[in-house]
Image 1 (tube, rainbow, N blue to C red):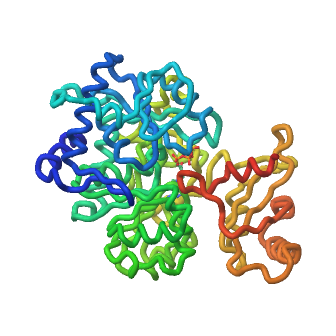
Image 2 (cartoon, protein in one colour):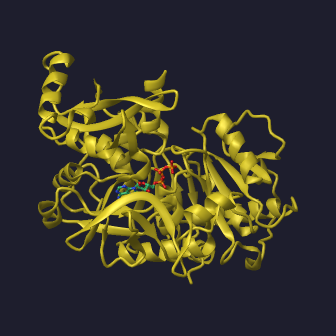
Image 3 (cartoon, rainbow, N blue to C red):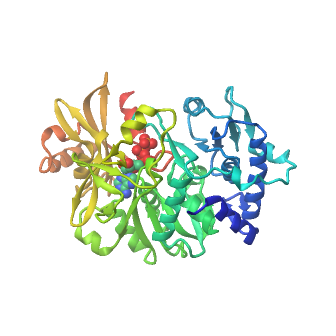
Length: 491
Ligand SMILES: Nc1ncnc2c1ncn2[C@@H]1O[C@H](COP(=O)(O)OP(=O)(O)OP(=O)(O)O)[C@@H](O)[C@H]1O
């Protein structure tokens, strides 16, 4: 079985000068990564924490975060990545719930906590160590390698524990199915607290490639973002579909701007056909893959290659071929995942773990909470169980409503959020992006859209209000920010 650390060490020995991680203002070579993470591991080991006690690493797209990740696992501890966009109450919650032994920071964090706090740069500055811990100290096999807290869009945040074996299987699967061996730059768009980042981080480091990270600051400033993308020389692009959709709003984003780009890896949300088509036009040399999976089964477990033929055949892209043995549909249509990437469970939550990871016919599975269906040799994603809501006694599928609204000719994209009053849903609101700017009043457009919609949906499924936006807001992970929109609705 692949050892992630041993593979990175090999690169560090063979190509110490090669850049491992690059941002617009910082970079780190493989030699530095290996040496500095040794220093970090030495520091951690001298704290005499309990083996496997988690280390929280706080920051945003900093090379020192990766140094801290590897330092933690070299000393036998899982790391818990926390992005600096995380609200402080949530950081408190993660610190307490994880039982962390150390909080390492790569940027200032003002917070009162009983847990020891240390800036990674201070640790490294004061380190005089030339010692490497033996590889026997490294996190291995069924030990926990990292813990990622889910965003908690459905209930309390849960700490998903991923073992060294889970991660090794995931990276081997990526290497087997995608063109990742050839040298080139991998884009890192997702913050480390979102497991989509694992899709670029470890295949890149294990393969000895360079990761190019784009920061939230750049994402908020289109000029800086596209300059950065143009100079990145990216070959492998990993992001949410929503992030690509946002980039598509700029006409300059195309193969001329990014001539080396040959692989798009999408995961985390539905990849709309319209987005795939536009990408095919703008990036004729690139292959697009739609990957599927939740954090609980290590990033992604299935994929389909998006082809002209697939697009012509279906009105929605599938998420897996039926031959994918790790995915199956339970009796009620819920998607279940089995296999070597299924997580060890939620940290400190045995009941939640037992419920979400039952053993069925001797096989440990993860119940995803996603609903799917089979057609013509493929599995399709039809929505999430928690998006089934009850309004005035009717059971509704929010994604079904969104799909119908998005299919209306004037509409480019749409998100529907329920409005709650004392835990009861009293109405649905639709947030829409139109293909063309509004010519008439919003009132007229809403009237027209509701009339069109009434041909496809019964009256009780038609949202009460329609709000027009230039673009759907994205959360820090680059997914459509449903939670933020829902909060807006309830204030
Ligand atoms: N290709 C895809 N098509 C449709 N949906 C996808 C795809 N890939 C992932 N997803 C959705 O994303 C989910 C996994 O995302 P993730 O593990 O980040 O958690 P989340 O549910 O978005 O957020 P959280 O659990 O943190 O509240 C899947 O369960 C599925 O609902």
